[in-house]
Amino acid sequence: MALTTTDFALSLLDDVLGARDPEEVSREQDARRLVSLGFLAPENGQTIQTRGCSKCGATMYRTVETDSSGNPTGSAMFICSSCGNMEA
Ligand SMILES: [Zn+2]
Image (cartoon, rainbow, N blue to C red):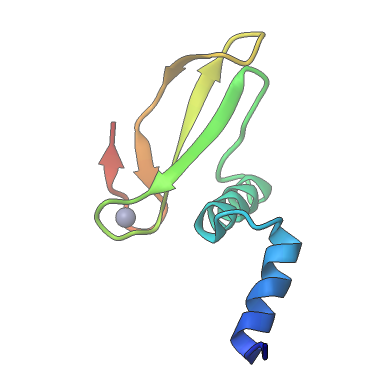
């Protein structure tokens, strides 16, 4: 069986990403980039959640308060990094 160039590239990508959902991986990378820029500032007792924006398909973020065991205790609205859409 002959692999096409695209198949080969995708198989390499799967190796690198551990065959994870590419969309999820890119959201995590977005979140890390925003944290490094100081746009998001997770602290102890907070974590960041992401999901796709229902309006534009870009990445939405929110911070979630957590207790000392890391269990969520409260959360803010999701805010889209691209269009500014807010969702609960
Ligand atoms: Zn959006």
